[in-house]
Image (tube, rainbow, N blue to C red):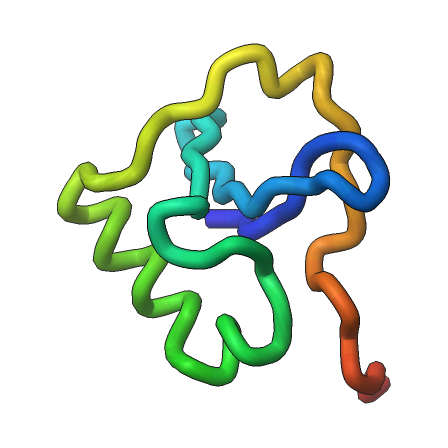
Length: 78
């Protein structure tokens, strides 16, 4: 799975792409993909929600801009 943010600059919405190529909204889990979401077990939350089938599928993703994967990164470690 790939966690991402889709949409216009400054108006991105959190999403996840699964290996089948389908996209799902992460809005039921978080308003954005940020350090707080990731530090609070966000990846596991996404995995469990996908397994439960509780995330809405996104349509028309090809027309959306792929934004930075994480909102407001605190620091980058290389």
